[in-house]
Image (tube, rainbow, N blue to C red; front, top):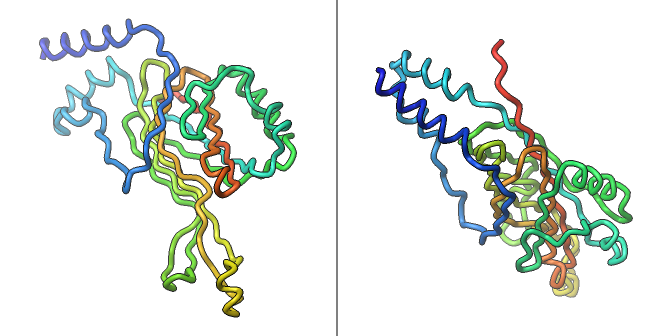
Length: 250
């Protein structure tokens, strides 16, 4: 027991002495299906019946906090270039690849950006959600419905599909996210109109992105996805400001 206590104390000391974490961002190719991520190694390795070791684990590392995420999605497809120039941060993006830009901003700059976003001409809020999760937890969320599409008549989902895996890296939130945002369209292509088929239902994907963000304490993430602007005239913004709430014993 003494050896286990010493080992856990050493691990805790190493974690506490880590240097501050810097902001990071990566954009990935969208996988065919979400990856399954591991749970907390401590909670995975300690046998459930070893109550004494669980008490030591919580005494040294504490209880897992709650991580609050409230991603918001805004359509900026009809926003003019002058308005976009006024909206975007003065700092260059942390990542810029294939039409997608990512900024991770300090609290004051993130709040100022959100205020500008609310007053940006032709900016339309597409979706928003709230997720309460925790470290080493993979959360899935779907908000939408289903519709029978014109191609084969099968029921297909549309709306917001989110898959988010969160960890804590010191005081920073390390999150890996997949976001898919789609809507129903009823305008038939010209070929169907020529054939006299006025009714047409299909699903249009406005956003499909896979990314990882390391967000320092109290910072916020702003993503501008313009990868579909040239071909489909679609430009979507994502706003996320993770908030960590320490565990409070009831």
